[in-house]
Each structure stands twice: as structure tokens, then as C-alpha cells.
Length: 304
Image 1: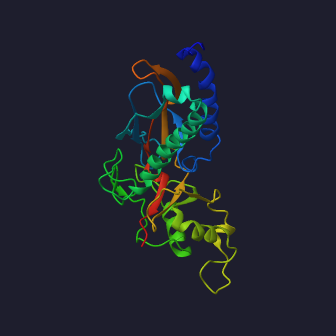
Image 2: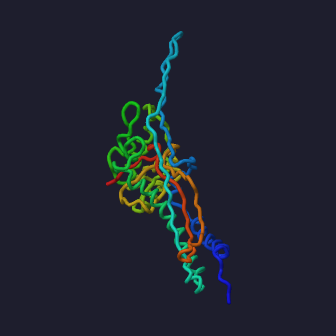
Image 3: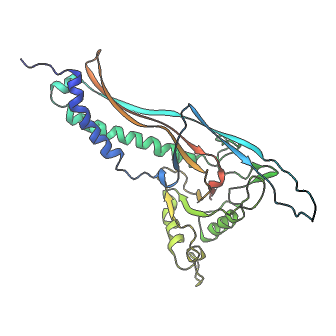
């Protein structure tokens, strides 16, 4: 009579096989979100806060013998990120083991489990863009990611195109001019560099045409495409397939505290037995959050 396999023996045999299949999917994929969101390590507590500061105005002229004046900066607002755990599991029943199907079924389940965790991360990051113009989803400054009313010390600034427009040569140039005129939290001009276009599937070919055409797109003239000749948007485009709008588009900049994913705890996989059902359970979890601190990280339009 065959000796029943103990749960520890089962785990030592099966878990490495499932891990190999899971990792083959999870670690070998090309993440869309990484082209737009910067990943950084989260701090060891249940939330993460980033104060957004304001500094000084322009330095005044000092006539000979005049004492220097003093200014003080401060905190404009605080962006708080709350970490969440995301995960899923599956069970291999005793019947599957008895019938010798546990390896085959387990490998299939492990593949789908990895795809589920990937889908969650891609959806959460894309939803930041899907809700960018929705006033119900706000950042630390109290307004949506893409807004014409971001508060600064004296007034507001806008990171939306002045007049909503479809992605075209003219509207893209207008957006780049607006980025060139961006100001900091004191209202001083800053030199943001536009890095790439961010779009959904509906604009992918239009974006490629605008970026790669030697001549100005959409006209019969022989005017050069200044965007290409000036070497702007050097990173090209990032296309997020889970962006739902067929008209919205953005230009991402090099603002350092823009879109980000804060990883509190990386991927963890484990396997254990269930005494009540004689099943072996395999799970995968990770803990992170997504959002933005500085809305100057993207300038966008809902399009038309």
C-alpha cells in the first residue's frame, strides 16, 4: 500500500514547479505602466506622505549698502499615499492529487494567477489616466490630476490644454508651448522637458505619425516638423492599452515627482495545506499604491 504524501512533501515537490511557471509569466512580461509611472520603494508604515513645498520669489536688486531681505518658504500641501494589498489564490484538491492532475492543473492556474496580478497593476495605473479629468478623484492639492486650477502661492496653474483638442500637429505644438511656460509653486518659470506622448489605443498611430514625420503632418506644405527637427519628445510615445478614452492624450514631462508607483512590499508567493479540505493552497500577494505628487508630470487634454 502506497504511503500518502504529506503536505510538506507535496509542497517541496509542487511549489517550485508552480513558482517557475508563475515567474515565467510575471517576470518576463513587458509592463506598459513602467513606461509612464516611476516605481520607488515605499517607507515602512501603512501610508506615505510627501510634502509639496514652495520657496522664494525672484531675488531683488540690492543697492550698495542695503541689507539683504529674508523670505521663508513653506508647505503648500501634503500628498498622502495609502498602501493596499493585492492578491489571489487557488487550491489544488486532494482529488486532483489522487488522479495525478495536480501538476498540469496547477501550472495552468499559476499562469493565470500571474496574469491576474499583472492585470491589476496595469488597470490601477491606467485608471489614474482614465480619471485624470474627473473632479471626484483628486490629488493632494484638492483637484484632479489634469486641471486648470492647481493651487500655487498666488493663484493657480493649469496642466490642461487651453482649448480641448484632438491630437494633431497644431494641438501638440500648443501643448509643448504651454509646458515651456510652466511655473513653479511661487509662480516662477521653470524649464520642464517634454519627454513623451501618453495615449490610449485610439491615438497610437496618430502619435507615431506626429513623432516620425519629417514634414509637418496634415498639411500640403513643405514645412518641417519642428517637433522632430528640434529633438523634442525624445522618448516617443507610451501607449497604455487600458486607457478607455478614445480622445484624451497627454504629454509627460521630466517633473521628478509626477506619476509613481510606491512599492511597500514586493511580490510574495507561498503554499500551504488546508486541514479541513485536504487541499493545497497557493497564493501570491503584493502591497503598493499608485498616484502622483506633482501634477506637472503630465499636461493633457480630454480631446474632442
